[in-house]
Length: 139
Image (cartoon, rainbow, N blue to C red):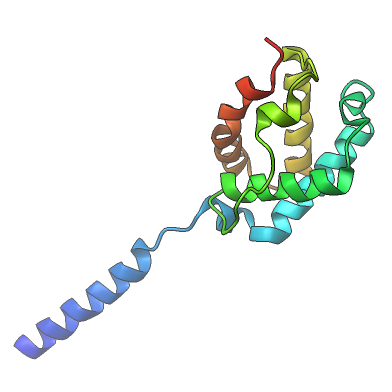
């Protein structure tokens, strides 16, 4: 009887240990492939938006893709490090208005929708990105 109880307890601990492993938002999103898909969709959204595209006129798009992918990886708890300038350095002097910032967020949401990211995960990712808003806006 004691042997069965010990075996049962060991099995329960093993199962609870597996169940308690939490996944990161990065993993829930689908990892690097999904991050890349979102960024690709976002670039497409920007490319066809007459209001936001001028903000990217002087940008190195390949660098933007690389650095924004890094940022999303970090924001989502992935195994990345952001290796670029601060948001203030990148967006300083761009005079981004509140309306244009909000429009860009809408474009980002469109990009996530096109990548079939569930709204629950979209909200989590956007929530983790909100601290960058003040760093980007012309106030």
